[in-house]
Image 1 (cartoon, helix red, strand yellow):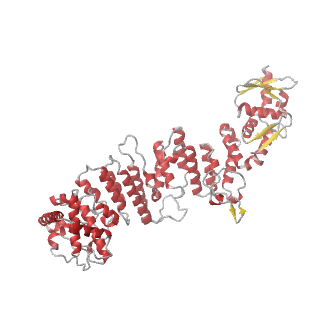
Image 2 (spheres, rainbow, N blue to C red):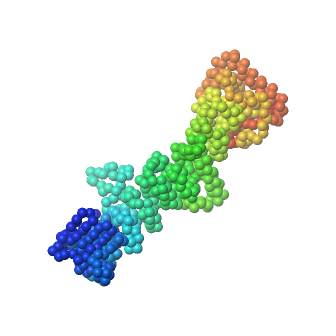
Length: 634
């Protein structure tokens, strides 16, 4: 820390209790100066020789025949006045970063100008500030902190502006030119962990965000002004600005790292969050999405303004693919029955979709954000990432027994148009919802299962689904059939010919959930929850169809068959007569019902295809046109 000593005489100030100061000399004092609650017994001559204001005040006391002066509004109070008084007496006084601003403001108040005496206190303090304090990184920050209690004097004397410029200029300097000490408590760089290279000690590398921790010591209003000044210089990248704001939030908001503001002054925390949001860089990607979502949680819990909340949601939607499921698990208000606030996530996805559509219409419209780096994801890759994110989110919120089906389905349908290679995530979410909501109706069970495309389930998911007694029988049939199609494609064989009654249950190409419903008793049977015997019978029936497709080598002898197909064949071979009878009953019931309903209705009945289904050729390849009796059942 820089300091300056003024005067050469020994300090002869004495105290008598807490409220009396006097100079111990042989000469009797001839004036009393009351500064706040403290009395100073002094001599007129040394004071009047350097202070224009005291000259005027003493002149007024002579007219009133009194020897007391009252000063109650001097900046810095008794301590600052004592520094000025000691300077007048020529006593030794030490100025440093902690008291120099108070002394400067008090000297201004006492009008200790050069016109009164050459080399007066104001001049000496200005020299000290410009030659030492403002050239020091940490002293500039300390001085800036002391200016708050001396407002508006420190503002009018431009001490604050000089401090701001000093701090901002040093923060913007090239790291190779940083030669002063700084605080860096964050994760060390690799170069700092390995100080030796080829046997020689390397100079530690200065990180780009070396200044971040030191500025966290500033009060909010001063911190805001420093960051604004740094941004105005345009030399610091926006990601470093974002990192600085993140560090400040961690320091000033208790519990922020855990996503929940705990304790502290609510009003101060609210003001801090709103200020940080306003200071966020406009460039897209300059702030991690996780940090933005934590800020969003804070704005909700602290009841911040709608402007800040909407601004955060706009930013988050721009980089939603970077979020994690844990980031999105925002608690609902206490008056809500659900555990998590699904509406907020739905709004984020809506905003994501809107901006994606806008960008596809006019690529030049990138809203008010600007790219500062190469995009991490293309548009399609971002959609896939968001779809996987929402699948994981749905699996988590599905555990809430109070979650309405409508909210679950609505959020899932928003990303259903995003083409993703696997539907294992949405299957897991559906299974979890069915597990936690066993009382839903058949129609609701059918509705939620339509979100899943059985053709995009992995072998492991199919293995689980065909044994899942929570799924409707319709869905189990679809899973088994497409597993057969997959096995046939792998083996290079023709897909099995299915009766039209079963084909009517399979997803129709491009139907996206179908538009008509022909509800019959058979439809209700297929939408019902299957028993273990039903599942076993269906497996056997489809396996029989598979074995009869003209594969001369047989499924069991084909080494290229999938494990799922082998399992089905094995189960078919080992099935007992009861299973076969059940299978025949189910299919015969379906055929007889569908034959009565007419040839045109079955093909257009409701299916459980997910909105992101594959193209028509895939479905056509699995249903050959040369089927016997095709027009009578489909």
